[in-house]
Image (cartoon, rainbow, N blue to C red; front, side, top):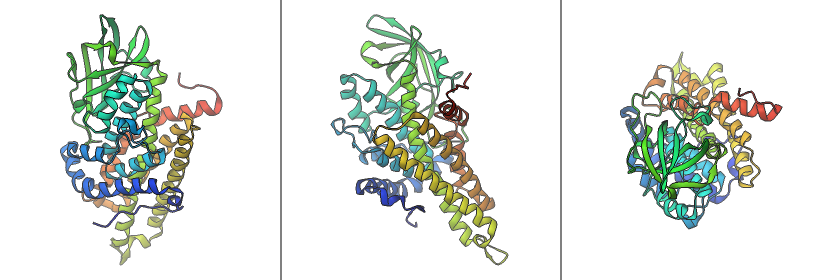
Length: 389
């Protein structure tokens, strides 16, 4: 197998530190050697490659930006982004797994949890001794999470939780779920452990997208959650949305990996596919498509790089993260479709990663905020006028 080098048309790598390049190269090698050979099989079978979880932990990818005192790598956001980029080059499902564990489980425990919660959970999650998931979306409340009906009521020594969540990555294999529910009308975060009576997480089947990923429902039927399992520093919708910002950041980087995989497939194919006596890469319309893809990848890379530096210096706005998520997901899906056009009928075969990436990106464009919602987030920031209602 040819070693993947990636496209870097504007020499952005020259701005990376040695440590950032080391992280990128380590994950790139892991994807080449461990992910690419098996991922199509898992996608076809609708299974998640659970055997890779421990290896992901050994690479230090869970909670990669969190402090080393919790067993985490304590890297910066460029390193985190590059890791997500390379994982999604393998498959969106694998990047989603790491994003959820890091951004939606470890981040809220670190940011909103008690010292006892951090000391207990973070080292175990970093080492993949425990797996987590994030429960915000409900069957009837996606883009409007504030309308959730999952609720908690105070009881002796804790709370009684009732309700349901949907479209939950990692849910069926998670040891702990970060669940958002209304307590006296106010949104609170709860650590719901898998052995709690009345809690179940059936896996959702029949997906045409993210097939190499576990997607579940979470069901709560009079689940008792002890007082020690409420996140003490989170009260209100702002707090789960802060978690989503972390996940959206990882998506913005991740989808560049899918772009690069699709572009490379199309470029290599166009050079070897002979029609009318010469490679299709020699035709103007094919070159236009390749130039479009290279340009859009470069723009997304530049956006991500500067976004990471803003994030590392505490200057980033959530609207800037929304812009990167909105732009990069749309571009990635367009690139996947354009690559499929270049490959023609061969583009639908599992021999090439293009259709798998295209199907995955249909979900990635929607989750963690739809294209429309991010458009309105940016629009409100530009005009000062909310158009959500």
